[in-house]
Length: 558
Image (cartoon, rainbow, N blue to C red; front, top):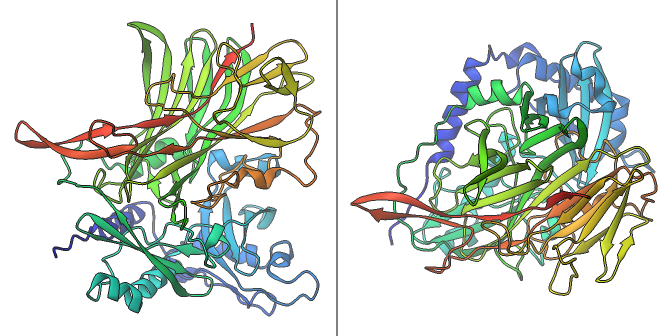
């Protein structure tokens, strides 16, 4: 049997080192972790930090506000906790709770509590030398620090079950995707209750997934997926310009005015391309919009796959990075320019080879005031039985008096009075125009929400889960870790965590819409969808792409 093992993780590691070397002197020995009796149970990061990051970590771990969350509430007993990352606060991260970071240098210290399966973000103001704010995300895990990636590879590569399945002893650099979070039913990894990842071994046209539980530090299962037939990758025009992209689009906000539309945008650490302060003909439309997660499941029964994040190419938690900037194009329909698009590409450098991913965000703005928020998958992934679920967060600017949110019941509009969620399926009623929801302001302005039913390009129906929550700046204004498990088949995709118990009233009218489309890939020749491949044309390999897209259209009320 011939073995194919990608070396891209090693190459990306070298690239990252070169880029970091160009971003300033790295002197981790200048500032050491400050260990006290109060924080000795919290494992600090000890590698790949510069002096500012190390100082920010020390400030966080000296804060009672932070350490409170690393102990049992009743007894005060220490709980296993660790710092997973220290990241510079980017423009898109600043909220009303961290407003000082608009002018001061700030860092976000990500801490994970293994016992409660909760991520805590501590926002550190370097000028003031203190923690400004701490917020939490229950049932989530930050991206892994390097030492845990190495530990996952070690567990996977030395597990007897993996060696038996492969038929040989794998090398440490054999697995791909060792840092991407996963799940597996009937184990402690089910619904991401523990911190679990899936180092994946590529063997010819198949992939062996080694599901590793890093909470218990053990292998919990192995699974095979079929990758489909593949050929060598064609030459692409995708340029790896990580540092340039980071400086132009991650560290600063870009403004855009076109066709009556005005907006700002920036690349986030792991929530894709974020729009903010969007207006049309001078009237505010959107507070913000972004792509929080991609959940990719390869089994409806075993429940394994990946939770992907998209974002900046360096100093980032994104599993799939942006290596070029956003592109603005005319939006043409039937030969007529009807608006424009803002598109951002995210990809693995070895795409479209198996176990490599490519995503796009596309924002469509029409000359008549319509707009659409779109998530696109361009394949190829780690199997031919994948379901892709992008998680979109859309916060419309409420008019004076707020919005009333309503659904169409087949006869009339029915108002929602409290937070909730709903699945679009075969029984869902739509208006004759295809509208499912309405946002109505006190002044009569607002929008209809039109989901995908196959009427949009590269769309076979969104089958979307829609969640409506009251606005809270701690629930997504700043960059978020992956908020949901990869592989749940039901409504538990992450946004349901922000529906309070009991659900909050929507009376104030400042609401957030979370939109989760569901797209199943297809590798059948002639019917490809959510797929990509390399084929021979004129004696050369070229890439063929079969995108799938999901996302709602917002149509102004007449």
